[in-house]
Length: 165
Image (cartoon, rainbow, N blue to C red; front, side, top):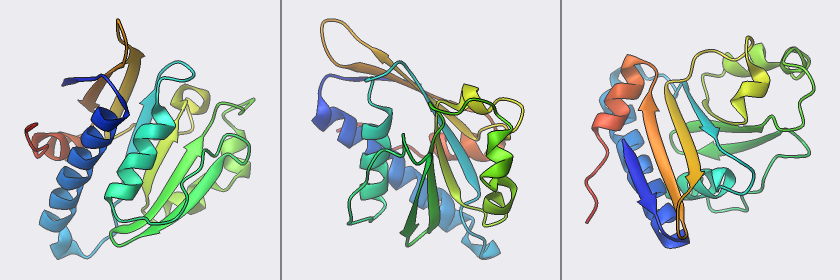
């Protein structure tokens, strides 16, 4: 599914819709009592808004603090009502195996909502994503955002996206 976001407000609105759908998915899965356990990858050129969309998603999921890019530290952790969210930015990763040194396997045991920018830098180590987010520059301004499911759970998430107003 593709979305045109002509400005920051449109990007935030898409993030809210994604959060609403995610909350619905997690509520429908709540009988298990398990945390989110979802991987969402964000791809696009520098400056297309990957961190902006993630920031909007985390805020829409109730995070009140500062959401910063993990470009230099590689990882930021956020405690949400739905569980732990881990935000990775792999842009500076030299080798996918570095994820092992960061303790990725132990982090995955937490069953987090895993949000990963530059996932191609973790190829072969990262599991397959539940949802792929692709951001591209759109003409004359704005961004085009494409969401695609990579798992049945990702399909269920995207199927619950509220229609735009």
